[in-house]
Length: 235
Ligand code: ATP
Picture 1 (cartoon, helix red, strand yellow):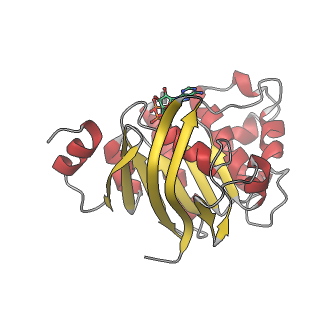
Picture 2 (cartoon, helix red, strand yellow):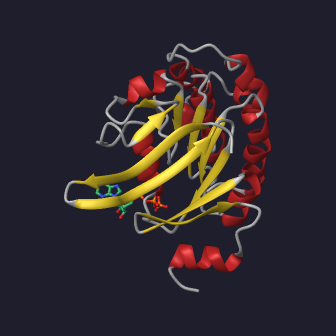
């Protein structure tokens, strides 16, 4: 495996009294694309939220390029090059497409991504750039959310439910864009409900079950039976 960009060890996460993650260990290599699968409520979003600095973590439980980041704020983590494409997109409804994209660019990092590069990736956004983000279709809004994350020129991008609720043709265009996104060496973690899709775009896969890692393996070699067991707890 390449050098790790991210190492997570014994990560717990709580919402008040409710514990959502239990002792999660995970290693992501530089330039690697990893998929995280698991049933509803398994803790996938919580894991991404922890990495992005949106949960209260222990300081040493998340290490990014050798630096403990568990106690940093979300804006500090973004500044180090980690960007989250959140579930439900979470665009600013009163702002235009372009204004939403420019918000991502407020994280001042050098790299290949700019407004022009995002518009090359998703040309429909250029045509719609002056429109309110809420006037776009769900799929187009997902493109804005991805573009906003790319505008920060991250080294690690976290996609939460990249294709949830989108039409198949839009899902295809978003997945078609993925190789171009990671071509420059960007690392990625993709939370995806569609297991076949998750396996096809990733080199390794983790499955979460009720807040615990129930499977870790190479995406090309894990079997259907292993996934069923890890996903549902049945053989
Ligand atoms: P889904 O695929 O449905 O999005 P998930 O695997 O991403 O699920 P999480 O959203 O991480 O799961 O949720 C993990 C657990 O934490 C669930 O039991 C959920 O109900 C709980 N949870 C999530 N957010 C909160 C919150 N803000 N307050 C309390 N509990 C929460």
